[in-house]
Length: 621
Image (cartoon, rainbow, N blue to C red; front, top):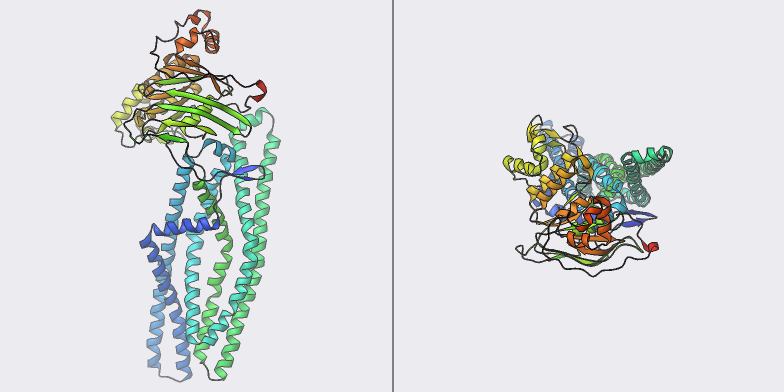
């Protein structure tokens, strides 16, 4: 089911490939900031725990410095015990606080990631079909799977350690300056070396990690298309080509991963040089300061130990840059999904939900590719509670009209007007059965529906017999790992969902096409029951479906060439009449095989002649 949503950014071309948008660094930071503001208590708790853990981690080293001075001064043993006690308590508090900090950071990060993933999935469900088809399913799947995995790994394992390390480094530097400003400046001498190392590493590694994420998306796309289209691959004996494509994309992903690792190993050498410079500076300055009486041996010892203790935290920050950049690239791609074009901004509705749910297409034009129009100036009107059947050859534009009405496509020109604030419910020929109890599958359309209401909906679409024959009735597990439904049964489930959702406006896009002729009549009858009293657009897979429609529009090359009631068009001797005669036989041309007379309540759109043959759209939709 789709409703009016707002436009965001369109897909971005990469060479000849179109990908979904990728958030910029600024957009990513703003997204994280907005997420933190949604969790103020937890964010404040993380900050407080970081400070406590860092301070408690520094206190034992300061206490050790005091102990060194007391021992040097030959102080009584009794005066050393309180200092040792403080150091022990601080170490215990620091350990507990560090553990609590890591847990809190991981918990907060997981919540923010969950919010982002939910937004991405919601955007994907409302994404324009042409945008998704241009970008490819692999790009979207890699974002909500591979990228989420990379971000989640960083959030739950790397980020907590990095956050505590940053807090400890900041507090340690302040403590060193408090001991003696000369020792603090000596330790700070390492900072430029660290900065130079990062300035060398980040500009080189960032593009590599972003490219690795894109390569992983290409690999996913190649795998999905090869596996999903295996029948076509076998039919054209294209196994070698498919395997070569998978091998090519996999090899590029491997090469980029190796390039990233090479950059990382070169970073390690630069970090070691920074550590040497800082520690050497503290020892030299400390020796001079102690010799001149400017500071004590204990202060120098504490400063050296604090700086040495920073080796692991700072190393963790720098060495984690790889994982953090990989996660940042994945997060930017995930946020980009939320910025992709959503539902139809072209659609307008009246503000009053009590307004009749009529449907109007006003001068609608659409192209999947520039310069190759699929629809040209389509005008259609479906009064509230009435049905319109669309008829035409493959490529005439029927499914494109259905996509525009359903909100998965946005027209290049014209508008769609839905009376009242009504969403449009679409049932297509690609019916999915969700894994789990059948009743849960049906309740996706109406979560509050009772078992009796579910049973009633199944009965109305003719599914009661086979449902009651299931081992556990409506509680039987279906889908993957459960009872496998036939195509006809799956379509009955989809129509039952429609009844439970009870929408005012419905699109049936060849919703009975996959069942086969054996079940065609019963499914068409079920579809009639499901749309009774609703405003409906029906993509007619079989001409028998037009008999129940209030009006018929015949499309050819993206234009409406005939419009009227079934009886009118069958008796007119035009395009539909010839199709009907070929399908039902010569005796049906008088219209008696069609349904009875229908009141002339439909606005007849202006007839437009189809374009010359060389302008026909190549996209068969």
